[in-house]
Image 1 (tube, rainbow, N blue to C red):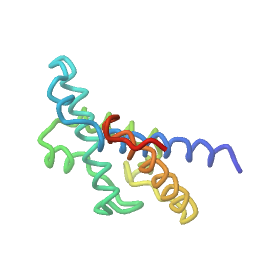
Image 2 (spheres, rainbow, N blue to C red):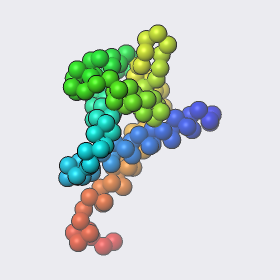
Image 3 (cartoon, rainbow, N blue to C red):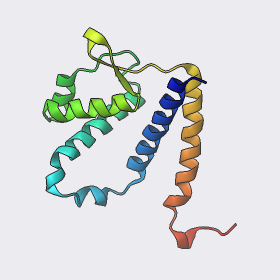
Length: 139
């Protein structure tokens, strides 16, 4: 297995872990964030939006992502959107494509199978963590 595949797989694992954390974290934590992190909140908002769009297949592999369209959709400036795209590129979800700009990364069917398997395992691990300790069954 080449080093590129190992790095890509590791970044997808990080990406999936982030998705699960975001999905299962309480909404109360978002309300208690300090105002000083306002820009970071906007970056997180853009990352979550783009991630949802890609995972819901509304943004297809090799499809160009328009910064302006994302800005208009979210009502934010281009700076947080650019930062979000850099983060998603680091995680392997999008890539720079020369003159086309940023496009959704394409994955092979084998990588998709592996991601689906890992996703299932992560969901399984996250399940018990969501049950309060007093309601867990002892094995």
